[in-house]
Length: 254
Image 1 (cartoon, rainbow, N blue to C red):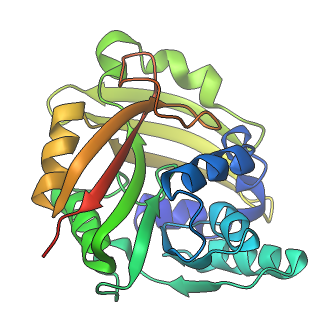
Image 2 (image 1 turned 180 degrees about the horizontal axis):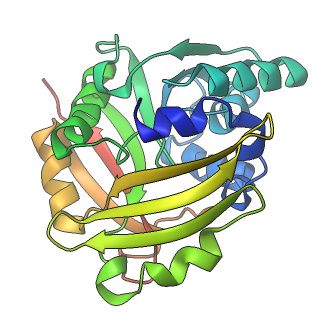
């Protein structure tokens, strides 16, 4: 079992308490500006997790399908949608092999919901290809990923105290300058109170590399921005002080 499958098997309620997921409304406000508030747009949320962006978008009138590999996350997403009386579709699926072709006007991949968690660069690229296939020509992808400029000027180890939470504590973190992968060992308590120790591997991307990958996957008009949770905008260029980077790109015409 991959580390992200082990983590999210029973970590939905705890996940919803993390600081970085508390800014959903402002993030969706930004998504709406990218879509010009056109609520006829069909949206695919790739790696939707517990459905925070999917549910908020659907509550505003958009047609939304959320896809995730974790049954536990999807179960929680359906519960939350029912509590809010919001109608949308949640499907179990692998972001690398989505069963859609030319269906959606917008695809989201936010907060490391799939890309860049995969074990290999090839698998991460498959997610971009899969997103492109799911979109209509001219459809837009909004993606956030780990910013490779950050570890060039900051200590990854220095983030340990900042990224530890009440349910997750980072014990060790290393960064490989050859592969641009961070390996992190952390202890976590799942929703049942069970303690686990997990070692993750996540890929950081530098701006020209991400641009090239998106264009190779079938996108054009790639825009890159620095971003932080709850502070999505088109004002900041990618810079070494932002841990994440945002890409906005459109699927090239056939």
